[in-house]
Length: 372
Ligand SMILES: Cc1cc2nc3c(=O)[nH]c(=O)nc-3n(C[C@H](O)[C@H](O)[C@H](O)COP(=O)(O)O)c2cc1C
Image (cartoon, rainbow, N blue to C red; front, side, top):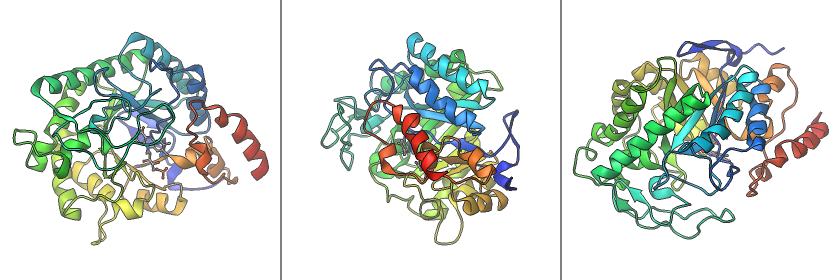
């Protein structure tokens, strides 16, 4: 059996985790058209828990029916039916002793589902919608500028979604403030030209995130985890970096320190921690996040690279690592690595534009036989 720091146990808000391995949130567009998680999704999430991941963060889940939804067939947490669907997913994961955290997502200007969108400022997003079958195509529309009443509606959506997450049995929620979606649109200078208390300084640009976090945190039991995910790169602007590099990171994390999430998940959407989280001066966003906020940090981005994952944990630049694409190829990645068995390399067909997850069972079984 492999001896590695990624298999050291650790506490997360009072929950004892067997290892440092977390499944990164991954949109699969496989719920019903009404946003209800299916039995197939329960089997999909179960495989990660059975495969040894100590925590699973779900795909981005929408929080209200007005503007938050990102994709067709995206699951939601806005009503009892969706909650009941999630309950089955949660049960399957808990049966294997893993935790499951719902990622709560508002797409803002980057919705591929809503014809009209809202955002901090009325600025046409760069890039194009993806070409998923059934989804909207072409460039993104110019969003409507978010008003005070929109802010209230968004906040209420997050609060209700968190309450439904508790009812479904989730161990926590992650507020998606990364990758160019709503809260990242507030943080990013070129998508936030507001002159009210939500625009201007970094502190102002993070103030709506702080309000939503406090609203959710104030309404959940103390053991219920409320994390935040942030990133520099965006789905529609992968090369974006915080202007000012590590200096901006220091200012940003000093503000996040006051928000005090239960964890901070620093994402490298492009799948390359070194390229997206390391600054020219040798400091890293995950290391700075850990040092300045004092909360547990999840690092992400190509961290199925064992040496790099161990280095981050052992050099205090992360407490946990989240794995995306390698977990799609190997839902039992922790088990395989621990037992020093071969893993399947990720190949892009695993992200089929199909609405089903059937490949996870049948195709993967075939592939495994091939590699074993
Ligand atoms: C199919 C797919 C869907 C994704 N959906 C989400 C999502 O819903 N929410 C999110 O925060 N990140 C999402 N991501 C980004 C991943 O969480 C992760 O940041 C990225 O894959 C890099 O990690 P990796 O190198 O381990 O794959 C998605 C990535 C993939 C491959």
